[in-house]
Image (cartoon, rainbow over the protein chains, first blue to last red):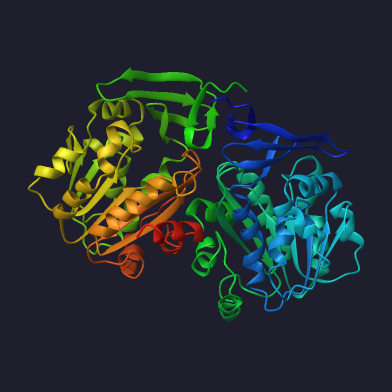
Length: 282
Length: 282
């Protein structure tokens, strides 16, 4: 076995690596280094600045879990803003809901979408939908000046370093709050309470100061640091579990590979150390 | 950063590694190679035959989750058999329950316990309790001839290769079933549905053929392959969620770092792909 790609986890002085069969794409955009690798264990893998963004093997966990929990809580999600998400996976899951009429997707780096359309069409194909309007610009600037209003904002960002940093700021969250309708929901990828507790704590203290409801839910994503990944659920009105739209879920007939009704509630049952971490942040 | 220990995941053609400050212990027993490493990211780490068995940083997840779910379902757990578990962590968690009067711990390799008593006393100290009777012998042979009867059997084994293999066999499970009282529960560590689905499927098909109730529950254990680890819950009478002993949980006053009441139920809400994997195994 010849490990020829490794992602380093400096906080843990650790690394996760795998064999690579072929480099399918490798380019430096004005913002970041983008690579797509063919691997024997994980299928194609999208890497940005040395960090695993998605693998064909487990992208379904991340994309189902960032999209369906809020989409089955909001009673009629029609207009969605996705910040980041240039690979198209989050848009793909949102489009499965017939109520969704418009998705504005704002990603700073068009090259990510181009690379994914070329090499990961089962994920990126959603970007070509008539319902999806892609804008390749800075999400932080977009929410500052945007006149639109949304039912759901999904922040599908990279890690809070370099390009992604502004997407974890209080001002950005405040602008998102303003863009949400009176019963809107914001969901963001919030990193790992196991290995990156400071980031999760920061997300909580900022979002819970702005939104009346702020909860986290979790998923098992093996190729992200620690595999213990969480999503913030900040809501103007709806409770993430009590307001689950059971009838719509049942009548939808949708099949998922990770998400399901029992897991919707179960994902919000978080470990004690994580609850204490965020209680402590108040 | 200098990754000087790596665990290889041959099924995934991948590896996870970390920096090591110092080798505290390294010996070959008649059964396996045992190492204890001092690391900057995970504290002390116990390695057996190149696989991470526990780290000081996250052992609490595994040990709380293998012990407390069955202990808060059985109404009066008194006598427990632990197969494996020579590090002492599972016994430590069981001893927190005042109803527990006797723990028989059967591990094939005394050197694991000796090494942990010397280097990981906060975990292994439980082995010195008057309530714990350690026997260093083959668990497979022990359950074949044992005249005792137990309320709870916990199979805290290594992976199903070499020494651990017999602890995943049908005959072994049948003997465990015989040793359990009429309302007894068996819990075992069942590896990862994400990366080792064949093993989990095998555990399910064998245990569900022997026990009237068979469920899985899951936990986030970052230093195990995939971080997505599951436990089998095979029971002669009690349902793992409906029979949760809420009053005893509340009055116990026990504090946990991972486990809690909401998470008890949440842990049994498993992803769709995992449910389909075991439905398929019937």
